[in-house]
Amino acid sequence: MAGAQDHETVSGYPLDEEQLESLLVNARECALNWSTQDGWPVGVIHAYVWHEGRFWITCAVHRHRVAAIRRDPRVSVIVSSAACDPDSGAPGGQATAKGRCIIHDDRETKDWFYPALANKISPDAEAAAAFVDRLDSPLRVILEVIPEKWILFDGGKMAKDTAGTLTDEERGPLLSADAERMPRELAKRGLA
Image 1 (cartoon, rainbow, N blue to C red):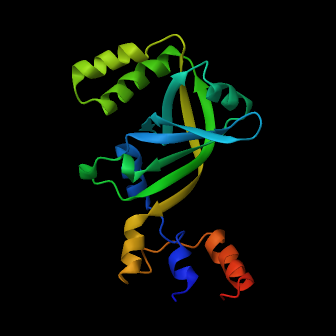
Image 2 (cartoon, one colour):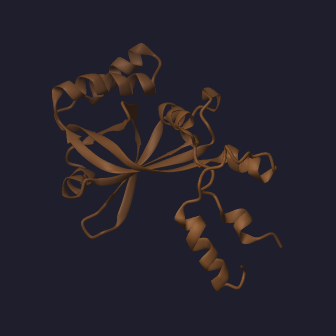
């Protein structure tokens, strides 16, 4: 039997900065997650724009997520390569950002964001213009998520490691879950 650590150590496969940028620019949607008033974590899939190192998302102001974010602006955003066009060149993997959310309701933000989102969703100019018109509602707000911490995974690095071709330079440092907690759990189960 192979050692459990051979299959369970994944934090050493982070996306590099170029891969992360490619993933965030090319993915069509993300999961925005927040905590409800009674402490439950919940999330919704959204189309988004990655702009100037931040996630930009929109929804109607009366949605529960807006009230929850006003109460506690700590959120997370998850982006998967499954949300990318296979021909985009984006890496296989995922990125989770822990961050804080700012709610915008100003005309200046809406004026740049709506066309940016519409053009990302539809390359057809007429369809994009129609989508901007649909978005431009007095009940709509823009959510700006500022990342503070990243949890990254590069599936290509894992595949290379499995094949024995991953170099030490490509490998990232193990996070505490793999470097500290996994060895303790292995010892506790008599697998060390």
